[in-house]
Length: 405
Image 1 (spheres, rainbow, N blue to C red):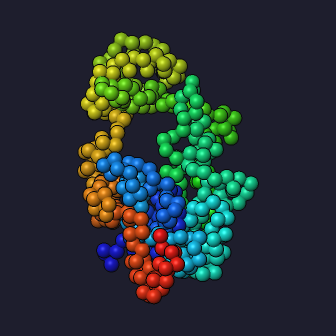
Image 2 (tube, rainbow, N blue to C red):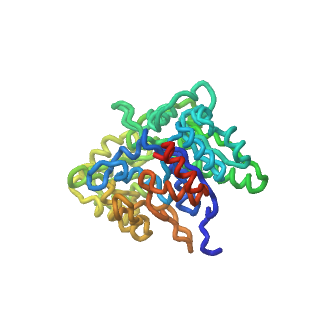
Protein backbone atom coordinates (compact mmCIF):
# COMPACT_ATOMS: atom_id res chain seq x y z
CA UNK A 1 0.00 0.00 0.00
CA UNK A 2 2.89 2.37 0.68
CA UNK A 3 3.78 2.41 -3.01
CA UNK A 4 0.30 3.46 -4.16
CA UNK A 5 0.06 6.90 -5.77
CA UNK A 6 -2.67 9.30 -4.59
CA UNK A 7 -4.98 8.65 -7.54
CA UNK A 8 -4.09 5.03 -8.14
CA UNK A 9 -7.20 3.23 -9.42
CA UNK A 10 -8.94 6.40 -10.64
CA UNK A 11 -10.06 6.22 -14.28
CA UNK A 12 -10.31 9.35 -16.42
CA UNK A 13 -11.53 9.76 -20.00
CA UNK A 14 -10.04 12.99 -21.35
CA UNK A 15 -12.01 14.25 -24.38
CA UNK A 16 -10.66 17.80 -24.02
CA UNK A 17 -8.02 19.60 -26.04
CA UNK A 18 -5.56 22.51 -26.00
CA UNK A 19 -4.82 23.49 -22.35
CA UNK A 20 -7.49 23.65 -19.63
CA UNK A 21 -8.94 20.13 -19.81
CA UNK A 22 -5.67 18.35 -20.69
CA UNK A 23 -3.76 20.15 -17.91
CA UNK A 24 -6.48 19.22 -15.42
CA UNK A 25 -6.33 15.57 -16.51
CA UNK A 26 -2.51 15.67 -16.33
CA UNK A 27 -2.63 16.33 -12.58
CA UNK A 28 -4.55 13.10 -12.06
CA UNK A 29 -2.39 11.18 -14.56
CA UNK A 30 0.93 12.25 -13.04
CA UNK A 31 -0.29 11.20 -9.61
CA UNK A 32 -1.44 7.71 -10.48
CA UNK A 33 -4.76 7.81 -12.34
CA UNK A 34 -5.26 5.87 -15.57
CA UNK A 35 -6.04 8.65 -18.05
CA UNK A 36 -7.03 7.96 -21.65
CA UNK A 37 -6.55 11.00 -23.87
CA UNK A 38 -8.98 10.90 -26.79
CA UNK A 39 -7.80 12.71 -29.93
CA UNK A 40 -8.53 12.95 -33.62
CA UNK A 41 -6.16 13.10 -36.58
CA UNK A 42 -8.44 15.72 -38.13
CA UNK A 43 -8.62 18.22 -36.66
CA UNK A 44 -5.40 17.88 -34.71
CA UNK A 45 -5.16 19.31 -31.23
CA UNK A 46 -3.87 22.85 -31.77
CA UNK A 47 -0.96 22.21 -29.42
CA UNK A 48 0.29 19.53 -31.83
CA UNK A 49 0.71 22.26 -34.45
CA UNK A 50 2.59 24.68 -32.19
CA UNK A 51 6.26 24.67 -31.23
CA UNK A 52 8.77 24.35 -29.89
CA UNK A 53 9.49 21.39 -32.15
CA UNK A 54 12.30 18.93 -31.47
CA UNK A 55 15.40 20.05 -33.44
CA UNK A 56 13.23 22.71 -35.12
CA UNK A 57 11.55 20.07 -37.32
CA UNK A 58 7.74 20.51 -37.30
CA UNK A 59 5.52 17.50 -36.74
CA UNK A 60 2.42 16.51 -34.80
CA UNK A 61 4.52 14.23 -32.60
CA UNK A 62 7.51 16.56 -32.28
CA UNK A 63 6.12 19.42 -30.22
CA UNK A 64 7.02 19.74 -26.57
CA UNK A 65 4.11 22.13 -25.96
CA UNK A 66 1.67 19.25 -26.44
CA UNK A 67 3.95 16.75 -24.71
CA UNK A 68 4.38 18.91 -21.62
CA UNK A 69 0.61 19.05 -21.03
CA UNK A 70 -0.13 15.38 -21.65
CA UNK A 71 2.36 13.37 -19.61
CA UNK A 72 1.41 10.06 -18.00
CA UNK A 73 -1.57 9.54 -20.33
CA UNK A 74 -2.56 6.76 -22.71
CA UNK A 75 -3.44 8.10 -26.15
CA UNK A 76 -6.17 6.90 -28.50
CA UNK A 77 -7.21 8.47 -31.80
CA UNK A 78 -10.96 8.25 -32.51
CA UNK A 79 -13.29 9.70 -35.11
CA UNK A 80 -16.22 10.81 -32.96
CA UNK A 81 -18.29 11.61 -36.06
CA UNK A 82 -18.06 7.97 -37.04
CA UNK A 83 -20.79 5.83 -35.38
CA UNK A 84 -18.27 3.12 -34.59
CA UNK A 85 -15.90 5.67 -33.07
CA UNK A 86 -18.76 7.09 -31.02
CA UNK A 87 -19.57 3.64 -29.64
CA UNK A 88 -15.98 3.29 -28.46
CA UNK A 89 -16.26 6.72 -26.82
CA UNK A 90 -19.36 5.54 -24.97
CA UNK A 91 -17.49 2.47 -23.77
CA UNK A 92 -14.83 4.79 -22.39
CA UNK A 93 -17.51 6.79 -20.56
CA UNK A 94 -18.89 3.56 -19.11
CA UNK A 95 -15.37 2.66 -17.91
CA UNK A 96 -14.44 6.07 -16.47
CA UNK A 97 -14.89 7.61 -13.05
CA UNK A 98 -14.26 11.07 -14.50
CA UNK A 99 -14.99 12.44 -17.97
CA UNK A 100 -13.52 15.78 -19.07
CA UNK A 101 -14.68 17.56 -22.22
CA UNK A 102 -14.03 21.03 -23.64
CA UNK A 103 -16.26 21.16 -26.71
CA UNK A 104 -18.33 24.25 -27.43
CA UNK A 105 -21.56 24.11 -25.40
CA UNK A 106 -24.03 21.75 -27.04
CA UNK A 107 -21.49 19.79 -29.09
CA UNK A 108 -21.10 16.95 -26.59
CA UNK A 109 -24.91 16.64 -26.42
CA UNK A 110 -25.20 16.61 -30.20
CA UNK A 111 -22.62 13.81 -30.36
CA UNK A 112 -24.54 11.82 -27.77
CA UNK A 113 -21.87 12.00 -25.07
CA UNK A 114 -23.12 14.97 -23.02
CA UNK A 115 -23.83 14.64 -19.31
CA UNK A 116 -27.38 13.29 -19.60
CA UNK A 117 -26.24 10.61 -22.04
CA UNK A 118 -23.15 9.89 -19.92
CA UNK A 119 -25.29 9.52 -16.81
CA UNK A 120 -27.47 6.98 -18.59
CA UNK A 121 -24.35 5.00 -19.45
CA UNK A 122 -22.61 5.51 -16.09
CA UNK A 123 -24.92 6.83 -13.32
CA UNK A 124 -22.14 7.80 -10.91
CA UNK A 125 -19.85 9.47 -13.44
CA UNK A 126 -18.28 12.83 -12.64
CA UNK A 127 -18.23 14.94 -15.81
CA UNK A 128 -16.43 18.25 -16.13
CA UNK A 129 -17.37 20.50 -19.06
CA UNK A 130 -15.04 23.43 -19.55
CA UNK A 131 -15.38 26.30 -22.02
CA UNK A 132 -14.90 30.06 -22.00
CA UNK A 133 -18.21 31.36 -20.69
CA UNK A 134 -20.04 28.33 -19.27
CA UNK A 135 -22.64 25.93 -20.60
CA UNK A 136 -25.64 28.24 -20.20
CA UNK A 137 -26.62 31.88 -20.54
CA UNK A 138 -26.51 34.48 -23.27
CA UNK A 139 -22.73 34.30 -23.67
CA UNK A 140 -22.48 30.49 -23.73
CA UNK A 141 -22.12 30.42 -27.52
CA UNK A 142 -19.05 32.67 -27.36
CA UNK A 143 -16.17 30.38 -28.26
CA UNK A 144 -12.47 31.05 -28.41
CA UNK A 145 -9.31 30.71 -26.35
CA UNK A 146 -7.89 31.94 -23.08
CA UNK A 147 -6.78 35.19 -24.70
CA UNK A 148 -10.44 36.07 -25.21
CA UNK A 149 -11.55 35.02 -21.73
CA UNK A 150 -8.67 36.97 -20.16
CA UNK A 151 -9.73 40.05 -22.09
CA UNK A 152 -13.39 39.76 -21.10
CA UNK A 153 -12.46 39.06 -17.46
CA UNK A 154 -10.45 42.30 -17.28
CA UNK A 155 -6.84 41.10 -17.20
CA UNK A 156 -5.93 43.05 -20.33
CA UNK A 157 -7.07 46.30 -18.74
CA UNK A 158 -4.89 45.73 -15.70
CA UNK A 159 -1.77 44.39 -17.46
CA UNK A 160 0.53 46.55 -19.58
CA UNK A 161 1.65 50.16 -19.70
CA UNK A 162 -0.58 53.23 -19.42
CA UNK A 163 0.80 54.87 -22.57
CA UNK A 164 0.42 51.75 -24.73
CA UNK A 165 -2.45 49.59 -25.94
CA UNK A 166 -3.64 46.79 -23.62
CA UNK A 167 -1.09 43.99 -23.42
CA UNK A 168 -2.41 41.02 -21.49
CA UNK A 169 -0.56 38.39 -19.50
CA UNK A 170 1.71 36.13 -21.54
CA UNK A 171 -0.05 33.26 -23.36
CA UNK A 172 -3.73 32.44 -22.88
CA UNK A 173 -3.85 33.36 -19.21
CA UNK A 174 -7.14 31.74 -18.20
CA UNK A 175 -5.92 28.47 -19.74
CA UNK A 176 -3.04 28.57 -17.30
CA UNK A 177 -4.93 29.33 -14.09
CA UNK A 178 -8.25 27.52 -14.62
CA UNK A 179 -6.92 23.94 -14.32
CA UNK A 180 -5.91 24.62 -10.70
CA UNK A 181 -9.51 25.45 -9.85
CA UNK A 182 -11.03 22.69 -11.99
CA UNK A 183 -8.79 19.92 -10.62
CA UNK A 184 -9.72 20.85 -7.06
CA UNK A 185 -13.42 20.92 -8.00
CA UNK A 186 -13.19 17.44 -9.52
CA UNK A 187 -11.49 16.17 -6.36
CA UNK A 188 -14.37 17.60 -4.31
CA UNK A 189 -16.87 15.88 -6.62
CA UNK A 190 -15.02 12.58 -6.25
CA UNK A 191 -15.09 12.91 -2.47
CA UNK A 192 -18.83 13.58 -2.67
CA UNK A 193 -19.27 10.49 -4.84
CA UNK A 194 -17.24 8.42 -2.40
CA UNK A 195 -19.56 9.43 0.43
CA UNK A 196 -22.90 9.38 -1.42
CA UNK A 197 -22.46 7.34 -4.59
CA UNK A 198 -23.71 10.33 -6.61
CA UNK A 199 -22.06 11.68 -9.73
CA UNK A 200 -21.78 15.35 -10.68
CA UNK A 201 -21.76 17.60 -13.73
CA UNK A 202 -19.25 20.42 -13.28
CA UNK A 203 -19.91 23.48 -15.46
CA UNK A 204 -16.48 25.12 -15.46
CA UNK A 205 -16.37 28.52 -17.15
CA UNK A 206 -12.84 29.83 -17.68
CA UNK A 207 -14.12 33.37 -17.11
CA UNK A 208 -15.50 32.53 -13.68
CA UNK A 209 -12.56 30.40 -12.58
CA UNK A 210 -10.06 33.12 -13.47
CA UNK A 211 -11.91 35.97 -11.71
CA UNK A 212 -10.53 34.66 -8.43
CA UNK A 213 -7.20 36.20 -9.44
CA UNK A 214 -8.78 39.64 -9.84
CA UNK A 215 -10.40 39.60 -6.39
CA UNK A 216 -8.44 42.60 -5.00
CA UNK A 217 -9.31 44.75 -8.01
CA UNK A 218 -12.98 43.73 -7.96
CA UNK A 219 -13.25 44.39 -4.22
CA UNK A 220 -11.51 47.75 -4.67
CA UNK A 221 -14.06 48.82 -7.26
CA UNK A 222 -16.97 47.50 -5.18
CA UNK A 223 -15.90 49.41 -2.08
CA UNK A 224 -14.28 52.56 -3.47
CA UNK A 225 -15.46 52.86 -7.07
CA UNK A 226 -11.82 52.92 -8.18
CA UNK A 227 -11.17 51.09 -11.44
CA UNK A 228 -7.63 49.75 -11.65
CA UNK A 229 -5.87 50.20 -14.98
CA UNK A 230 -2.51 49.46 -16.58
CA UNK A 231 0.51 50.49 -14.54
CA UNK A 232 3.40 48.57 -16.06
CA UNK A 233 5.45 46.67 -13.49
CA UNK A 234 4.56 49.09 -10.74
CA UNK A 235 2.44 48.66 -7.63
CA UNK A 236 -0.37 50.97 -6.55
CA UNK A 237 0.95 50.96 -3.02
CA UNK A 238 4.73 50.44 -2.98
CA UNK A 239 7.76 51.99 -4.66
CA UNK A 240 10.15 51.48 -6.23
CA UNK A 241 9.06 48.42 -8.16
CA UNK A 242 10.07 47.50 -11.70
CA UNK A 243 12.26 45.57 -14.10
CA UNK A 244 15.61 47.27 -14.65
CA UNK A 245 18.07 46.85 -17.55
CA UNK A 246 21.31 44.95 -17.03
CA UNK A 247 24.44 44.26 -19.06
CA UNK A 248 23.95 42.21 -22.21
CA UNK A 249 21.19 41.82 -24.77
CA UNK A 250 17.70 42.18 -23.27
CA UNK A 251 18.80 41.30 -19.75
CA UNK A 252 16.72 42.52 -16.80
CA UNK A 253 16.48 42.30 -13.03
CA UNK A 254 13.31 42.99 -11.08
CA UNK A 255 13.29 44.87 -7.78
CA UNK A 256 10.28 45.20 -5.46
CA UNK A 257 10.54 47.45 -2.41
CA UNK A 258 7.60 47.28 0.00
CA UNK A 259 8.96 48.58 3.32
CA UNK A 260 11.11 51.39 4.62
CA UNK A 261 13.65 48.79 5.73
CA UNK A 262 13.91 47.43 2.18
CA UNK A 263 14.31 50.96 0.79
CA UNK A 264 17.23 51.57 3.15
CA UNK A 265 18.67 48.17 2.18
CA UNK A 266 18.46 49.14 -1.50
CA UNK A 267 20.32 52.36 -0.77
CA UNK A 268 23.07 50.38 0.95
CA UNK A 269 23.27 47.96 -1.97
CA UNK A 270 23.71 50.94 -4.32
CA UNK A 271 26.42 52.46 -2.11
CA UNK A 272 24.13 55.08 -0.53
CA UNK A 273 24.10 57.42 -3.57
CA UNK A 274 23.49 61.13 -3.02
CA UNK A 275 20.33 61.20 -5.13
CA UNK A 276 18.60 58.67 -2.84
CA UNK A 277 19.08 60.98 0.16
CA UNK A 278 16.66 63.55 -1.25
CA UNK A 279 13.91 64.14 1.33
CA UNK A 280 11.19 63.60 -1.28
CA UNK A 281 12.12 59.90 -1.35
CA UNK A 282 11.89 59.44 2.41
CA UNK A 283 8.24 58.31 2.45
CA UNK A 284 6.39 55.71 0.42
CA UNK A 285 4.05 58.44 -0.81
CA UNK A 286 6.97 60.50 -2.01
CA UNK A 287 8.55 57.55 -3.78
CA UNK A 288 5.27 56.75 -5.52
CA UNK A 289 4.97 60.35 -6.70
CA UNK A 290 8.56 60.36 -7.98
CA UNK A 291 8.71 56.82 -9.37
CA UNK A 292 9.94 57.94 -12.80
CA UNK A 293 12.95 59.69 -11.34
CA UNK A 294 13.79 56.76 -9.08
CA UNK A 295 13.52 54.31 -11.99
CA UNK A 296 15.93 56.42 -14.05
CA UNK A 297 18.52 56.43 -11.27
CA UNK A 298 18.19 52.71 -10.54
CA UNK A 299 18.36 51.87 -14.27
CA UNK A 300 21.61 53.83 -14.58
CA UNK A 301 23.03 51.84 -11.67
CA UNK A 302 21.94 48.41 -12.97
CA UNK A 303 22.61 48.76 -16.70
CA UNK A 304 26.25 47.62 -16.59
CA UNK A 305 25.79 44.80 -14.07
CA UNK A 306 25.37 41.09 -14.75
CA UNK A 307 21.88 39.91 -13.82
CA UNK A 308 22.67 36.93 -11.58
CA UNK A 309 25.37 38.78 -9.63
CA UNK A 310 23.07 41.79 -9.22
CA UNK A 311 20.20 39.64 -7.98
CA UNK A 312 22.41 37.87 -5.45
CA UNK A 313 23.91 41.13 -4.22
CA UNK A 314 20.49 42.71 -3.75
CA UNK A 315 19.14 39.67 -1.94
CA UNK A 316 22.16 39.57 0.36
CA UNK A 317 21.28 43.12 1.40
CA UNK A 318 17.66 42.12 2.06
CA UNK A 319 16.15 43.58 -1.12
CA UNK A 320 13.56 41.42 -2.94
CA UNK A 321 15.00 40.91 -6.42
CA UNK A 322 15.01 38.41 -9.25
CA UNK A 323 16.65 38.10 -12.65
CA UNK A 324 14.28 37.78 -15.60
CA UNK A 325 15.01 34.25 -16.78
CA UNK A 326 14.77 32.67 -20.21
CA UNK A 327 13.82 29.03 -20.66
CA UNK A 328 17.51 28.18 -21.01
CA UNK A 329 18.16 29.86 -17.66
CA UNK A 330 15.40 27.83 -16.04
CA UNK A 331 16.80 24.54 -17.32
CA UNK A 332 20.13 25.31 -15.65
CA UNK A 333 18.70 27.00 -12.54
CA UNK A 334 20.50 25.50 -9.50
CA UNK A 335 17.45 25.77 -7.24
CA UNK A 336 15.23 23.88 -9.70
CA UNK A 337 17.99 21.30 -10.10
CA UNK A 338 18.19 20.90 -6.33
CA UNK A 339 14.45 20.26 -6.16
CA UNK A 340 14.60 17.86 -9.15
CA UNK A 341 12.01 19.91 -10.98
CA UNK A 342 12.86 18.77 -14.51
CA UNK A 343 12.51 15.08 -15.37
CA UNK A 344 14.03 13.63 -18.53
CA UNK A 345 11.66 11.16 -20.22
CA UNK A 346 12.13 9.08 -23.37
CA UNK A 347 9.50 10.20 -25.88
CA UNK A 348 8.75 7.79 -28.74
CA UNK A 349 9.40 10.40 -31.45
CA UNK A 350 11.57 13.06 -29.76
CA UNK A 351 13.78 10.83 -27.64
CA UNK A 352 15.04 12.08 -24.25
CA UNK A 353 13.38 15.40 -23.44
CA UNK A 354 13.21 17.37 -20.15
CA UNK A 355 9.70 17.70 -18.74
CA UNK A 356 8.58 20.11 -16.04
CA UNK A 357 7.67 18.54 -12.73
CA UNK A 358 5.35 19.85 -10.01
CA UNK A 359 5.92 22.92 -7.90
CA UNK A 360 5.82 21.22 -4.53
CA UNK A 361 7.64 18.49 -2.65
CA UNK A 362 6.07 15.96 -0.28
CA UNK A 363 8.28 14.06 2.13
CA UNK A 364 8.56 10.44 1.07
CA UNK A 365 6.79 11.03 -2.26
CA UNK A 366 8.75 11.56 -5.47
CA UNK A 367 6.02 13.23 -7.52
CA UNK A 368 6.31 14.09 -11.18
CA UNK A 369 5.43 12.87 -14.68
CA UNK A 370 5.40 9.06 -14.76
CA UNK A 371 5.94 8.59 -18.49
CA UNK A 372 6.03 10.81 -21.61
CA UNK A 373 3.07 12.05 -23.59
CA UNK A 374 1.77 9.76 -26.33
CA UNK A 375 2.34 10.19 -30.02
CA UNK A 376 -0.94 10.32 -31.92
CA UNK A 377 -2.77 7.02 -31.45
CA UNK A 378 0.18 5.40 -29.68
CA UNK A 379 -1.96 3.31 -27.33
CA UNK A 380 -4.90 2.50 -29.60
CA UNK A 381 -4.59 -1.26 -29.26
CA UNK A 382 -3.72 -1.15 -25.56
CA UNK A 383 -6.75 1.00 -24.74
CA UNK A 384 -9.15 -1.04 -26.87
CA UNK A 385 -7.91 -4.38 -25.66
CA UNK A 386 -6.71 -3.86 -22.07
CA UNK A 387 -8.76 -0.90 -20.88
CA UNK A 388 -12.04 -1.54 -22.67
CA UNK A 389 -11.76 -5.30 -23.01
CA UNK A 390 -12.62 -5.37 -26.70
CA UNK A 391 -12.13 -8.62 -28.58
CA UNK A 392 -9.95 -9.05 -31.65
CA UNK A 393 -13.10 -9.20 -33.77
CA UNK A 394 -14.46 -5.97 -32.30
CA UNK A 395 -11.16 -4.18 -32.83
CA UNK A 396 -10.96 -5.40 -36.43
CA UNK A 397 -14.49 -4.18 -37.09
CA UNK A 398 -13.65 -0.76 -35.63
CA UNK A 399 -10.58 -0.50 -37.86
CA UNK A 400 -12.55 -1.53 -40.95
CA UNK A 401 -15.20 1.07 -40.06
CA UNK A 402 -12.39 3.69 -39.86
CA UNK A 403 -13.33 4.56 -36.30
CA UNK A 404 -9.64 4.48 -35.33
CA UNK A 405 -7.64 7.27 -36.94
